[in-house]
Length: 210
Image (cartoon, one colour):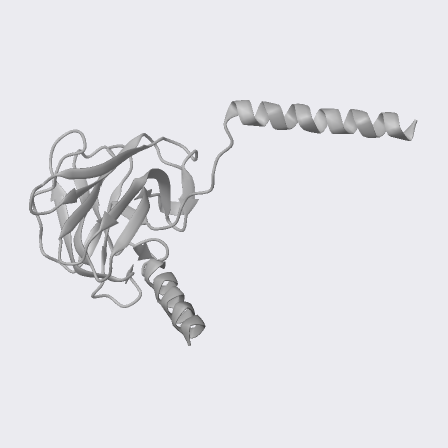
């Protein structure tokens, strides 16, 4: 009986530790309208709440066509009520950042989001066009375990807390986030050690054949 109780408790703990989003917040993205040309200053994103406790590990920005960003972009996430910036990240130009679906991501320190708290995630990307998606249009956007989605935007150069909204059930593209950890990128020193190790192995095998 004690063994069964322990096993049941362990199963509950494991189930509770699995993130409900289990991936990007926005998936299957198909822009429904262009709202700003490349070069327009402004911060664009959306407000949301989570249904379950979520721990996000990276922030991302929309990369239309997946062919790289024209310039460096910034992405941030705020507490809606206090306007506190909880995390932010720079996304480099080109294709250096990790591409997952329609967005390029960089890692942040794990950030836990709580149900009942409203958040805003948004990006500043002055060199790429900004587009919009609306959940009211079937197939336009999948809202992965999120509620209360509204578009938010703000004028000005640099990443700033966006204060304006048209209160559409959608989002500007704009920003995204994911609970998944990004693949680790080996540091140059690690690559050098790996290379020298492989070279040594090849040399050893050649000597062994002789």
